[in-house]
Image: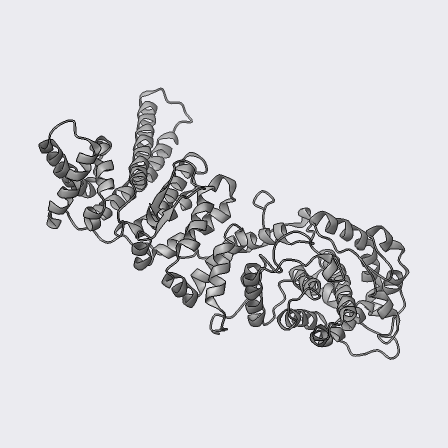
Amino acid sequence: MGANTSQVSDLCENQSLRTLIGTESISENDPFWNQLISFTFISPTSSGDSKLLEEAVIPLAKILIENNPRTGNFGALVRIFLGRTKELKISTECQDQLFIWQAHNALFMIRCLLKVFISEMTEEELHQQFSYQERAPGSYTGREDLLEELMCNLVHLVVEVPLLDITYSILFEAVTTMLSWINTHTQILRLVKTLLYNFIRQEKCPPPATHIFDQQSDGGGLLYGLASGVANTSSIPTEQHHTFQINFNSLYTALCEQQRSDQATLLLYTLLHQNTNMRNYMLSRTDMENLVVPILEILYHVEDRNSHHVYMALIILLILTEDDTFNRSIHEVVLKNITWYSERQLTEISLGSLLILVVIRTIQYNMTRTRDKYLHTNCLAALANMSAQFRCLHQYAAQRIISLFALLSKKHNKVLEQATQSLRGPRGADDSSVLPDYAQDLNVIEEVIRMMLEIINSCLSNSLHHNPNLVYALLYKRELFEQFRTHPSFQDIMQNLDTVIGFFSQRLEAAGTDLSVERVQEVIMKGAQALPNDRLKKFPELKFKYVEEDQPEDFFIPYVWSLVFNSGVGLHWSTTNIQLFSMDSA
C-alpha cells in the first residue's frame, strides 16, 4: 500500500504514505496521486492477516487524524477514487486493467484508513475527517461531507460494474468497505437485487493469473453470506413498497444448494417470512424435497450446529407447515437412501415421515441437552400443523411419536416422585422454594404431554385409515397412556385414544392369539375402515402461525453481525470492542 510497497513491514517507512499523512496539503492535480495508488500489495485473505495490516496502519492513521483537518488529504484521496468510479464501467468494457487496478488500490487505502477512523473517534469527529478547512491551490475549496457520496458510489459500483475476473477484487473491496460502515443510510433496492443475483451465481474467486491483484483464495462466491447482512441492518420505510423482479427459479435453486451455511438459511428465512411472492412460489414447487431435506439435515446434526442456525431451520419448517397443501404433498414425495440419517437405514421413506422423525429427534435431543423452551414450542407447533394431514407414516416415524410420549411420561413420573420425596423428607429453612420449582417443572411437562396427546388425537381423528403404523405403535405401548386416563388435564383428550385402543384391542382379541406382525397389521387395516367417524370426538383444528417477537432486532442484529464477524474474509474485528454479541455465540 503506497508506491512500491509490497508487504506490511514496509508501510511505516513508505515515503508516499508519509507524504499523504503529513502536514502539507496535496493538490488533486498533483502526479503524486497516480504514484500513491500504483502499488502491488497482497490484500489480506484471513482475519489474522487483516489484524497484522490494521496494526501497521493504526500509527499512520493516527498521524493522519491529527493532520487531516488542516490538509484535507484524506478527502482528496476519496475524491480521487470517486473520480475514477465514473469511468469504471467503461474501463471494464475496454479491459483497462491498469485503471481498475489503481481504483481498487485507492479504495483499499480508504477502507484501511476508514476502519481505524471508526474505531478511534466519535461519529462527529469521523465526519470532520471528510471535511476540511483549507486546500492547496488548484483544488476544490468548498466545505463538504464526502461520506454519503462515497457510500452511494460504492452501491453504484456494485450494481453497475459487471462481475468479471478483472473486477472481482474491486467489487469485493467495495462490499468490504460498506461492511466497515454499514449503518450509513442509502437507497439499497438495486444493491439488494445485485447481491441476490451474486448469491445465485456463486462465482468463485478467480486464480491470481486471471487478474492483477491477489485476493481471497478460499471458496465461497463474491458477497456470499453478505446479502442477508445488508438486508437486515438497513432501514426501508414500511409504508413504501419497493419491488424489483428477480428469477425465482434461479434463486430457489441457489437456496436449495447452499443451506449448509447460516447465511443461506437466514436469507431463506427472510424471504419466506417477509416476501409473500417468494413464499408462494416456493410452496408451489413440486420439488420441495430439494429445499426441505437440507433443512432437516441441519436439524439432524444439531450437536454440530450453533443454536441460531438450528432455530432458523425450525422456524422455516414452521412457516412451511402453515400451508395445508405443503402438509399433504410432503407425504406423497418418496425419498430413497437418506445416507446422513445414520441411526437407522432408511432405504425408502416419505418426506413427511422423515420430517417427523427429525423434528421429534430434535425435541428429544433438546430435552436431554439444552432444554430450550422455544425450541420445544416451535418443534411441537410444526408437528401440530402437520398432524391432521399425517399420511401413511413410516413405521419408524410412528414409533418415534410414541417413544417421545414415553420419554415425556417417564420425565413426568420422575418429577412427581421427586416432589413426593421432598414432601416426605425433612425440610430446612431454605426449602421453601423447592415445591414451587417442582410444580413449575410439572406444569411445563404436562403442557408438552397435552400437546403430544392432541397431535396423536388429531391424526387419529382426521386420517386414522391412512395410518395403521401409528395405531400399531399405539397398541404396542398402550400401557403408557393408562396413568393419564383419569388425570384432570388430559381426560377430555384421552377419550378418543381410549376409544381407538379399546376398539382395536377387541378386534385383535377376536382374531386369536400368537398373531404375527403381518396379521396384526391386517386386522388394523380392516378395523380402520370399520370404525365409524362419529365414535371420535371432534376437537378444534391445531393451527399455529409463526410470529416474530416484539423486538426481533434484539435477536437478528447480533446474529447477523456474528455471521459478518465469522465470514467477512479479509476483515479483522477487534474482539475487545465487540458489544452486540458474545464471542461464545460467534
